[in-house]
Image (tube, rainbow, N blue to C red; front, side, top):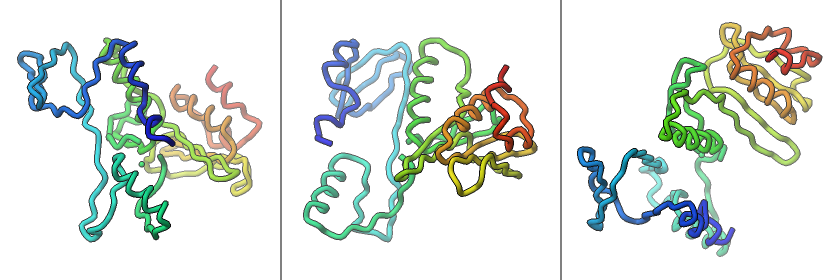
Length: 229
């Protein structure tokens, strides 16, 4: 991807939306009493509502002194140069697209969870905007994410919580199939291979807080959508 396509939005779009974007100027003081932020350049910005989004950094490994931590653009350019020179690279750490690392309380599960996938980070961004605009309903969307591996589509819905029972719809190992994870008889998660319709319907069942039996989950003739009626 060319460098000019990396920003989330074109610079002109911020101006069209009447957004003042200040980059590369660290905040020295939030100015809570006066509601005025002080920047390192000496500039001040007044605010009515303030959202602090700290971001994150890659975990550092003391034993790898020459490691490149792929987090910001200069590191990506360095890795790109090494690839172009056909240098040998060892990759440590990988997974789903590495999203939000914030642990948050989920009212549906009544515990704190963390979902390291960009889908949840994106949806929580919308939730923050709604909250700052005055909405009081808690964020209760059931986490959902996916990955495509060649001809296989992997989808997961729910939280990575302890489970006691697995119920499979379809034949395990022969897509399409979905595995449902239950705790105390309650559906807490589902993982499907090439079975996105079942996973999507399981998500709506969990968000609605509907009770469903293992027999209903295992039976492909049971339309999970009817349980929402």
